[in-house]
Image (cartoon, rainbow, N blue to C red):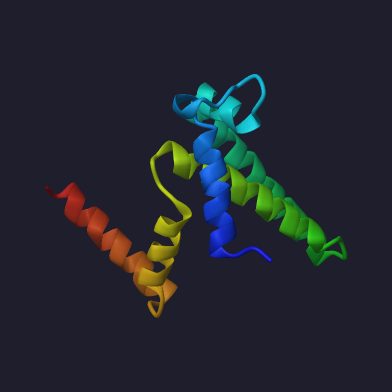
Length: 122
């Protein structure tokens, strides 16, 4: 079972693969993506998000629901690479989700739009 501890352990492995931490792009997929820079891992995030959508659409029509899990795992993994690149951790995402807890999605979206308008007026 994956727990926040599991995500933190994976985050630590990803962190250790950073080029500045000795990650070798010739022997590590994570190090290779980080070495290539944001365009490489951001492209992978886009690809994986699309694969989640395709797996979910297939599941809606009798396809293997477990494939959705596998594709979401790939998406989470690649987003964790992005988090590491930007000096963030899974705990930062969990804290944001906890901050939003109890707030309707409609309210949250309205608050974000209001903040964006305020920022644009500065």
